[in-house]
Amino acid sequence: MSDGRILVIVPTYNELENLPRKVPLILEQDERIDVLVVDDASPDGTGALADEIAEHQARVHVLHRGGKEGLGPAYLAGFRWGLERTYELLFEMDADISHPPDALPTLIAAARDHDVVVGSRYVGGRINVLNWPMSRLFISVFGSWYARTVTRMPIRDATGGFNGWRREVLEAVGLERVRSNGYAFQIELKFLAWRKGFRLVEIPILFTERDTGESKMSKKIVREAVWRVWWLKVRDLFGRL
Ligand SMILES: Nc1nc2c(ncn2[C@@H]2O[C@H](COP(=O)(O)OP(=O)(O)O)[C@@H](O)[C@H]2O)c(=O)[nH]1
Ligand SMILES: [Mg+2]
Image (tube, rainbow, N blue to C red; front, side, top):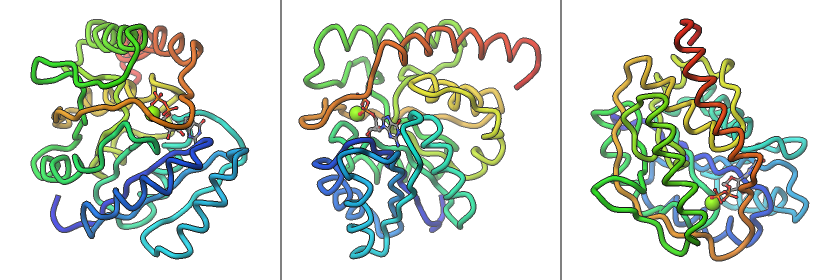
């Protein structure tokens, strides 16, 4: 990363309370940062609130989509929006409090000599998660182990959603081939970058469960991740990446 512009993409679905808290915290981390909110027509009016924030803050942009299509398609739309402009580093980040904005400067600095910076809950010999029930923690830790074992990708937090991508990575992986929708989306994108030979690094972050609003995690999202890693592996074996 040189002095290039940075885009932090925040997908939203019913995040009325979280969004206005989160956006200023992101912007204050670095003056090169712009925020793009990608809202899937949230019934609670998050999209309209995002427009209002953008009206008062030139560094905030909003992409409205027709309906809830999942995290993957929302991020793909956000990445395309950023790549059409001059952003050099593009981040994914939840609208809730779970991904700490004050980790951004460390992640941005790490992107100077890496292509993908992964905000990771599971490096440094610790599990850095606060306020998750054991069941959720188990799914996440087991899921990361499972993804790592099946794909052989040396990333401990494969499903994590707080990641920064240098523009060249997103241009090289071929976003049009990305199919995953939920957590599998995070695994797929990291896997593609890794297989293309890009340099990934995990930086420890402390993940705190949201204090307001609802998680969109579902059994369907977990089921998708379970079969997708095999789909990735097979596609790779047949040289179709
Ligand atoms: N645009 C859009 N955002 C979504 C969708 N599903 C989840 N999100 C957002 O993606 C982020 C992560 O989802 P979240 O429910 O926090 O999942 P969790 O952190 O795994 O519990 C949050 O900012 C959500 O509002 C979706 O279908 N479309
Ligand atoms: Mg979340």
